[in-house]
Image (tube, rainbow, N blue to C red; front, side, top):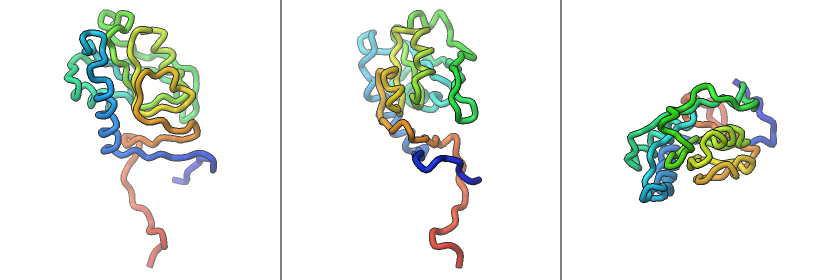
Length: 168
């Protein structure tokens, strides 16, 4: 399948190993920074991209209470208005105090802006951040330029690639 990216757009391929390392680094950065003697009450993963980092962070920080919020903000690689499709348990959430909201990436910031309005006291953490959305994130690991398209391992498949110099 031919790529349809414009020449100025950059692709950043993330392997499973890399998302695991970066998610662990995010966990270590969050460790001891919760409001309850450094502890966090729960993790809320923004589906679907936040689920893999949330699992790794929950394991690293020994957090057993995990919920999800489903927000749709991408429509076939073009951004549209964000909308909540599934919210986490209201009793768990309150105003968000002690809750880690985890996503893989903040791009425009629309998704996190919507979730932050719902849970203003939550702590928002992403593995990767683009400049436009960075103000919506409290903690992140790696910043990439706004025109970078991140290819996550769950969106990729291993396939044969022709050698650089072609066939024999």
